[in-house]
Length: 106
Image (tube, rainbow, N blue to C red; front, side):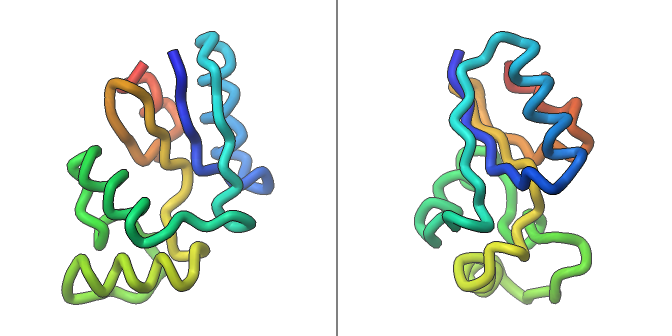
């Protein structure tokens, strides 16, 4: 199985999610989203695939946006607004908060 994780190596919970993927024997592609931010189209695709409203995919301390388009624009402009540990596999997409949520798509 293959997985992609939008990862922040400075975040202990992100490292935990990555460790769970590695322990499961998953081939992991790591995207350091703060260094290589996803495009607006990529954000939209991933969240749609996971059934996640973009407004709900923003960090809890981020400004609140009235609609999903504004949220996508904001995250594309500033990747620090993205709630971390977005994980995608062939089975779906989760925001791995808590990290154990990765098991839902393994």
